[in-house]
Image (cartoon, rainbow, N blue to C red):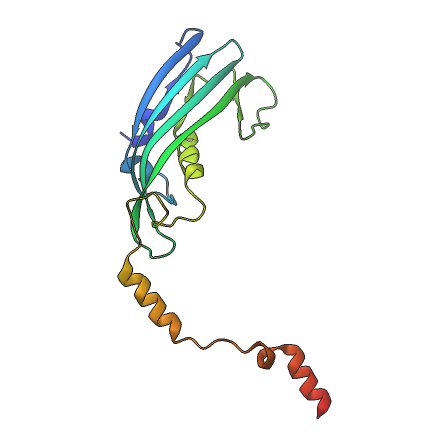
Length: 177
């Protein structure tokens, strides 16, 4: 069975009102997405689905940890995830192409909704834009050996003299000759 089949949520047999679903996210979930930034992690998803006559309201609460690569030292570190998000799915005969970030349009003929892509997007949007493992309050610190190696290699690079390499300076030299 594919790991994402667990996230197909059949809503046709549900009564009107609120329903609670829980999912465990692991490495198999992240590996099902081809170019995922996150490859390993462990998250708990609590999904409250409120079924109404013409729409579904999906409230996601996602907590846990994912492992990211530090942008500074390239080491792996654990990033805590704690996020709440809401998605609204409305039923319609027309305007099937008018889905937005918060509203998904479903056909009246559909009987289930795949919440795996929504969970994946919520987790990826909760990841910081710049991933650094030495942020204050975290137990992880950057790999000192790698940072020392980067500093040693960058010390050998000569600074660029902008006045000599400037295209305007070259033009001035041509004019003077």
